[in-house]
Amino acid sequence: MAKSLRSKWKRKMRAEKRKKNAPKELARLQSILKTNSDIVMDEVKDIVTVVPADKVTEKKDPEDGSKMDMDNKRSSKTLLDQHGQYPMWMNPRQRKRLKSKRVKGKNKNKAPKGLAW
Image 1 (cartoon, rainbow, N blue to C red):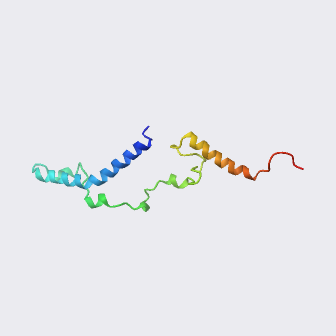
Image 2: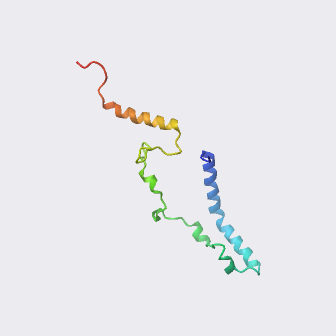
Image 3: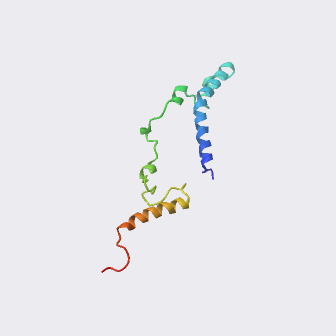
């Protein structure tokens, strides 16, 4: 399930919100830990990974190998992968439409049917 455009948009926006609120949450956590004298930050480091706000907000380089390799093997024009398969998210009607365009383009080179004098 969860493949509709609305759910994808909601998921994307939740991720944006997490990125935006991460520095605030970290600061709030640290302020809470500083006010309580019975909890020491060293004890919490075993449970929680404390990351500075600068590292959370900085962008990652796309060259670090995070790009999926299956995206590279898909034709941008026909949306077919190296095995001739369409993506999972594409519905059968779209597949049929693209296939008819593809087949129509191949048949142009054939001689017309009928009598050949």
